[in-house]
Length: 117
Image (cartoon, rainbow, N blue to C red; front, side):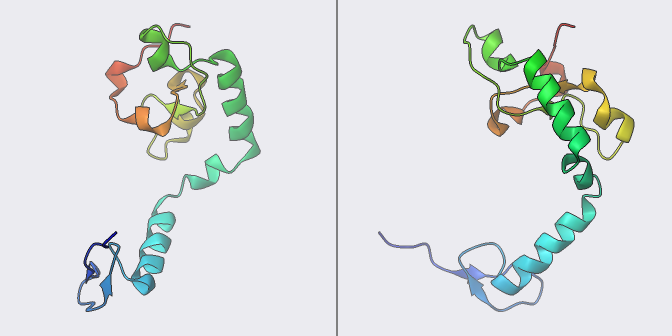
């Protein structure tokens, strides 16, 4: 099967050809910059988050989107209804968490999600 033609690296001024968005050198830089800008990433790596995540999945074991559609499917992740954007109070608020089936179902607005308490 033929491959896509290589294109220029998206990093300004880089002439390297690549199959991806950035060449290998600049991909590492962009990944490092992206991770550096996500200061709240440390929350997700904490044992406190793991406990809270587990608690939400026990409380709401079924995918909320599937439940609305009448299907019974086990949820696999926990997501924030209102994006926290680094706000610790909103991040740890159990009432702001819900359990979709997969990350694919995260393409929704907070108005779409209503969880009874």
